[in-house]
Each structure stands twice: as C-alpha cells, then as structure tokens.
Length: 153
Image (cartoon, rainbow, N blue to C red; front, side, top):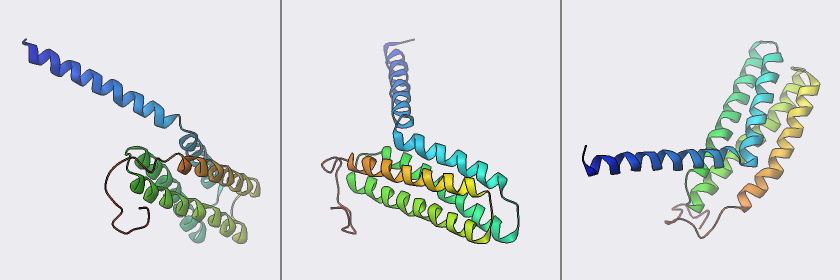
C-alpha cells in the first residue's frame, strides 16, 4: 500500500462523515419532521378510505402531493442557490395547498373519517407556519447565478 491509497481512503471516510452530518442536519429540520408526520397521517388516512373510483383518484393525488413535498424540501436543502431553493419552496406550497383542497373534496364526497380530515387540515396549517420560517431562513446572498425567469433575483 502506498501513500496515495491511504489518502484516498481517508478522503472517502471524511466524505462519508460529512454526508452523514448533512443527512442528520436535514432530518432534524422542523419542516422535514412535519412533512414526514404529514406523510404518516396521509398514509393512515388513505388506508382508512374505502376504495371506489372517485376516492382512488383523490388518494393517488394525496400520495403524489406529499411525496413531492418531501422530495422538494430535501432538494432545496441540497443546494445553496437562493433562487433554486425558492423554486422548490413554491412547489412545496403548491402541493401543500393541493392537500388542503383535497380534504375539502374528501369531505364533500363523504369519503374518509372526519377526524382524519380535520387532523390533516390541522397538520397542513402547522406545516404552513413552519414553512414560513423555513423560507425566511434562505440566504439571498448564497450561491451564484440568476433565475433566468426573473422571479427570484
């Protein structure tokens, strides 16, 4: 074994350590914790809703929305560029509003346990408050480049 092999191995270990620290940081964020809680609640709610044609479409929509929320939050946290973080935040908001609106549809059609519907509405409101703080934490001076669409410059 020569010197370069030891250096490469140390580099890999350091890289793995840094990756684990970043993963722990992201997993500890209040918005990530709330999104995961919302995911669990939606999964339990979906399991409680009887399958029929209309309900299945609403259930698929809920799963799509909450999955996108979790992915976009993690995507926003993976980088530093302000405008990219804001783009992902807008998508998170759109999907959260879609979940809130789906609760109205479930209610209107009489699908699902009303207690679950109210619980999800409450969780969305809690998520919204955490979301506001999360977006406020974005550093406008970080990163490089411009939003070519001109929204977040």
